[in-house]
Length: 155
Image 1: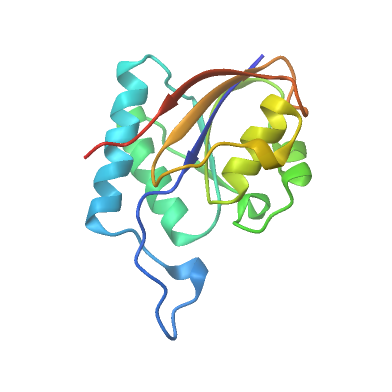
Image 2: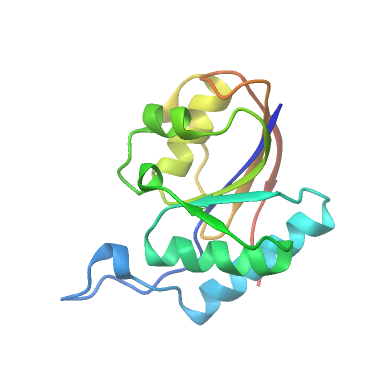
């Protein structure tokens, strides 16, 4: 059994000339959003034991804030969870068991949620910054997920 919490990164700095998308950082508000979502996971007893995240700066910052609150020491960075990553390849990178927090980006988080729950990447929910969806899966494959809850960051 896999319990997967799919989370979008917190609010990031806007695109700026000379700054690569991968290097954009969280705003102070985005950092607070990440903390709030992690606190809600703890309060709801949805505490992951592993965090996988995109290597982009804003996703790593979000994941680190969550890790601090969840008591997780190591982040697993994976290029398969960047904004334009293939949703089918992302599913292949998921572990088969455990309680995992995945921190990534739109549109991947929406496509991944739609594909895992409904078998269709185009029916996934919208994700506000630092919001998350908790899914249970017997095995990570299209259409096999069961929606547990949605967590929206309110700061």
